[in-house]
Length: 113
Image (tube, rainbow, N blue to C red):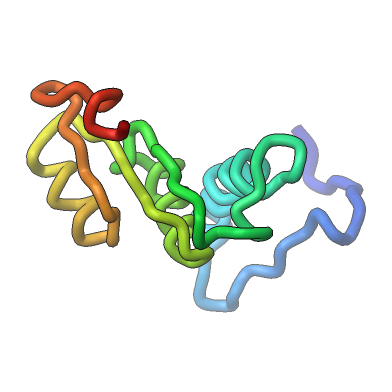
């Protein structure tokens, strides 16, 4: 580990003044992971035509899941997510998931079809 690092400018995010470094550290971990997987043309691109897209997010109540739901909604995708408890189901519904599947009680493959 180092006190300083060098990287290209486009890989740097400026944090709002009211956000601590600890809070800001979670942004790239969750949002860049989701961005690379949902919006990179090599894998799938919700930006080009999000209106005809649906996305399945496993574990929607976790950090990556919340980031995926947030970005999917922002780009107009239908968001489907799996969870394992009623509390997590409530959380992702409040977060705006379109379809919530408790995989301990339902077959998500059948429900998504």
